[in-house]
Image (cartoon, rainbow, N blue to C red; front, side, top):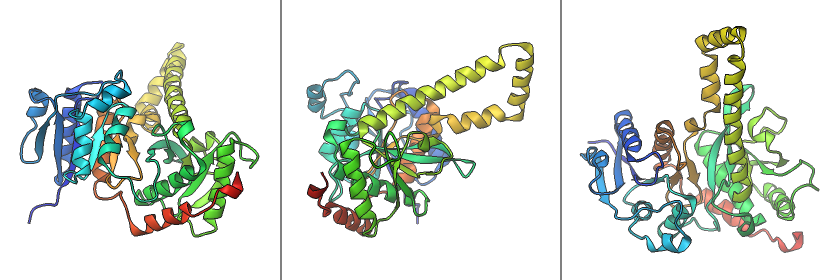
Length: 355
């Protein structure tokens, strides 16, 4: 009996670095996993894609590409785009998971038209793993939403759904009894926006009704990364705020690398110290901890089939990491009776008296 394969549909045309590094990443993934197969969606005459065709790789022709400059109207007309067809293949259960490096709006539209949301889910958030220190060891925290929703199309009930979905996601990634916090500008219950204060009350009531996680209350941005008293496994916010945090953290990583490089090159003594640090593996350890490429793409939660959104400017290493995330998601994330029941209980909490 042959291996039961995990099938991934990959949008090959939207990575800013081009098709070639993504094709190499796919080839690396084929070599790494014996039980994986692909649908590669892209231009028919692209030699990098065609060279991969074989028993475990099938090619799907697409004549359109969703560009970062496309308007909403243009995106809606591109139903033969590589992004749209990738989501369609997943929605029709031909592939177990999808992966695209396209722009957020284009991916979101393709998913909304092709992949059904779970019952009792109003919005499907992006969840991403962020580097963190926990118990004095390198670890990660899960931040969501990082771009699927905007501040003005989110509400307190949706924020509660995000926590439930992320708790299920975290448990399937190996975290036991995950701790969830709401991102705010302070830990006091009087802090935050009206939406956050209302969400805090919903979380508190849900926690008393058999939740799948431990609710911590409000947490701050530093709690995402640092060894603090809260130590949340999951930090929940709206997509606008989450994307601001994500972009700021990417900038901070770049600043840290630049500052360290400049400090060790400032004079002969620091250059010597830098050489010793480099030779001892210190820089490699720092780079591994801070490198966002090693944490894969963002995972859409709350869908009947998983879908991974990679960063448009992803490096080849980041592409390989996103493919690893897709492989791990295949057949693992999706609806379950327990998750549906918890989402149902959350939907029945009245918010009228809490405004």
